[in-house]
Image (cartoon, rainbow over all chains, first blue to last red; front, side, top):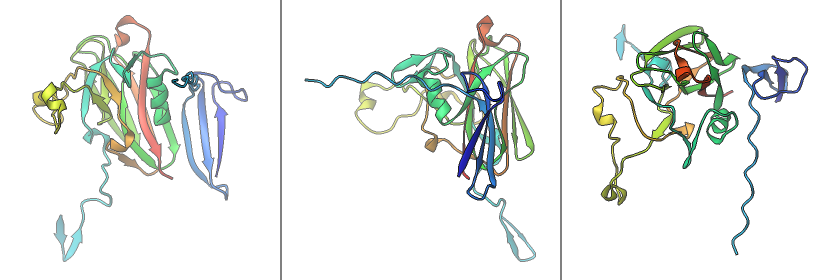
Length: 54
Length: 205
């Protein structure tokens, strides 16, 4: 299965917070399984690792 | 079940619900979005909205403008519910337009409280008002539920509101497409900046 993501707000540019995206999923034969459009949100920063207790 | 000329007809080809209007409708207040014990606002990427983004989609909703939160132009899956943006005053409305497999369903939700959010589906958990005795074991009913006249009545529910694991949310099946739009009345956000609205959905194929 392959997944293709397009930037609808700024075509050809990397996605940034708030951009609208289109994600197209295809199976191995190239048949389209789904087409979804929604707003892209950058993942939150990873929480700091806790120091092990002594 | 209907019996016609000796043929047994079932009322539906699937046991799953098909009409999002069959889901419960409720509302809560803006200041009570929780991820675990931490309260969150409408900042993109905070734990509440980032988590919702992993099980669905979210974006800002504006007054007097219909915004599309998610458009599954092609695909099969489940719609499990939605959480609206903050409305301003009692009497303001949240209008949901949910298009599933070509059928359009409209839900107009009138807020009864200031700074309220419209919530479709059993997607949230509210803080229980346990007593010490209730903590000791057994089951407890939400005190807010006791105020309901029936299952479709919308009431204001206080307390922390956190998104449930979607496995516990009643699914509405779509076979080909799903589009969820939201529009608030003209005092959305109580004069504050537009706030997020989200939809919980997933693909199954």
